[in-house]
Amino acid sequence: MGKLLSGKEVSLNLINKLKKNILKFKCEGITPAAAFIRIGSQRDDVTYQNSILRVCNNVGVITILHELEDNVTTDALIELITKLNEDSSIHGIMIFRPLPDDIDEELINNTISPEKDVEGMNSINLAKVFAGNYEGFAPCTATAVMEILDYYKISLKGKHAVILGRSMVVGKPLSMMLLKKDETVTLCHSKTERIDEISRTADVLVAAMGRANAVGVDYIKPGAIVIDVGINVDQNGKIHGDVNFDEVVNLASMITPVPGGVGSVTTAILIKNIVKAARNFECNKPTAKVCELI
Amino acid sequence: MGKLLSGKEVSLNLINKLKKNILKFKCEGITPAAAFIRIGSQRDDVTYQNSILRVCNNVGVITILHELEDNVTTDALIELITKLNEDSSIHGIMIFRPLPDDIDEELINNTISPEKDVEGMNSINLAKVFAGNYEGFAPCTATAVMEILDYYKISLKGKHAVILGRSMVVGKPLSMMLLKKDETVTLCHSKTERIDEISRTADVLVAAMGRANAVGVDYIKPGAIVIDVGINVDQNGKIHGDVNFDEVVNLASMITPVPGGVGSVTTAILIKNIVKAARNFECNKPTAKVCELI
Image (tube, rainbow over all chains, first blue to last red; front, top):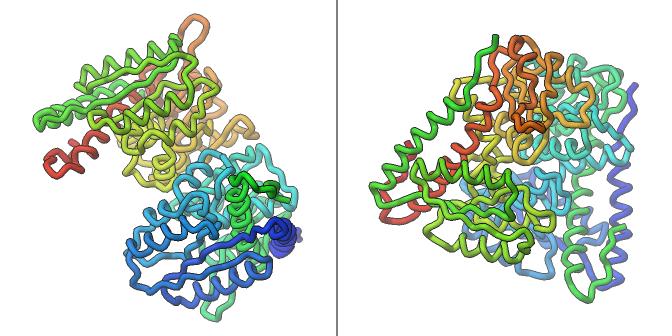
């Protein structure tokens, strides 16, 4: 049976490190703080928001929640973000997605100051990810995958990673991050022919297509490392990954479970980004002492 | 023997279309104009510059050349670019590369106004390429490859493209452009293991690693389409592609020659971008009539 790559363990380890950083910051009189914007009251958004806010509060990150009506305009949203950009007590800005259809998402992403863009959605930050430059912020879920590989010391220089799914929050940025680690990277998607055959050439297979249990044994080379990014909720509220875990676990050498895998790490990465934003901001002040992250 | 994909033919066709556009623009009193910045007097830069300026003049694009000393500072370069950004008679800005080592290239790229960034090097434009949005400008050589595929009506939805080389001017942007066309894309590089084996799975193989004649028969699946981006000059001044043409031509179904392939199209793409920049600029004026490119 493949070794379980526990996202919970990775997250716990990271959160503990971040707590130490935050404590060090507090001794210098600095408290990392982030603004969260939620539009409407969709149950999923509220659940997710509560979970993030709880973790932030536990580790000592100040959270300020802005709840907007469903019918908020792009202009009103821009006005709020501009105020938050100018507010020196706020280090990071996050917006719950998807945004309503009539909001200009690209404009919104580019309105958030790159220095406060802890979700890694601004063009300046995306271009950095594209260029393999880690000074900015990268999308949290893609970063969570890299955090798991790093934690378990999985180095695959020269090996072949196949990513199923080409989204701007997982597939595309992750392809650039794996490339930066000298992996050979293939991006597959819904139009890919012989997707199972291509998947079987993977030393690392990342499933991020958003289809419950779609990846079965036909997709797996014996001994492959399988990372499951999928979070699919069925009619009964049960969560399934994109990988058929029971089928695949005996073929893979390592595998992330769902739940308890990549999803568990994503919030910790968001907090890591808020702490990094706070550090960057304070380090630009001549009086700052806290520049090293632990 | 594989069919020759003539870059010269693609370029001629595109240049002819652009000439019609430029003529239409002139009838409205608009002449596309671009500023070219060359630092130092390296022979390759001067040769390339002369070739570009000649084509621009032939098609009716105004060119203004700025020749700077080898020891120009980043600050001085920024000052010049800022002036060009503000100059409403200039639609596009191009800088001959590579820049001297002590110039901050990322800062320079992001100083060029995205609207005048006809080389597609500004973060705003790169992020658009990453996102599969073609409203901005994409790097010219990667676009030249797409232009050749389009011209010869090579549609490979769902098929497998393998790109050898991960640069920011070819490999990475091209991977995103092919992905946008629903191809499955693999990015290989100098650290890739079993690179010949992976290349042999390609329906389209793009060689862009910059090593003369490195791609031989071992890399080719019979019937594959082979696009050679390499331009390698040997001691005798002879130009070689990255593909060993004589070895590969009988296995490939289609192949671009070197010279006379991708390189021939790159300058035409640059001019297309200058014309597009001029169109975009003039279309923002309330009196403008010329908004359609032919």
